[in-house]
Length: 265
Image 1 (cartoon, rainbow, N blue to C red):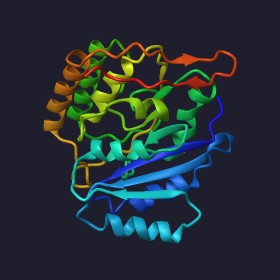
Image 2: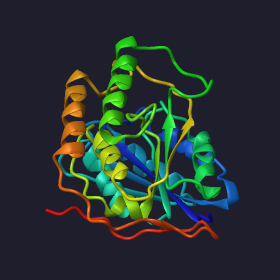
Image 3: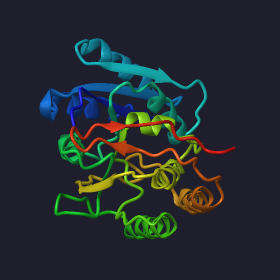
Image 4: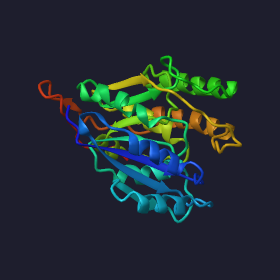
């Protein structure tokens, strides 16, 4: 599989303290096969100096392909992702949080199942492998595994980390899905919907995780956990069936041919 451009979608809300640091890490990553990086930042109406920090960074790094968008009203992480996904032009895209919890140096490992012609979607699992993991909240880890198990039972997948930020998608595929959730419900919604795409090939790779505390800016809370359960049930059981539009892979060149996937309204 040949990829010329990887779109990196970054939703940002009140991340002035870290956004330039994650952009520095992305800038220094050399992608395999000389894949070009398209960085798409969506500022979800931040109240701090996130906008100023981003625009200053863009001005100081004119050679980087960074595209900036902003919402006039705060809508949520999912809404910021919707905007970024729509604007992506690379053959594949990956989601990157604006904090320092996930390491862009692992993009190449995420890309390998795709480049080898094995995968259409790759999830980065915080619960696989032996890479560094910051030790933080016990109940958060239990909650993540609980939600992943419920999602798996409903979708018939065997993921280990449904709630992970690092998800690598075929861009045409993810752009064809009718995504609705504007907050943290994005994760269970997109997982439920990709699980229903005919012949989809989903892989996981182990990633590191440098989690942060609430004092350091972590935003997700227990209410989002209950919303996730609601979204798992809603998008697995109470949505119309997909029209039978198959995804086909050419066995010779491993190039994925995506047709639009629609929901019957």
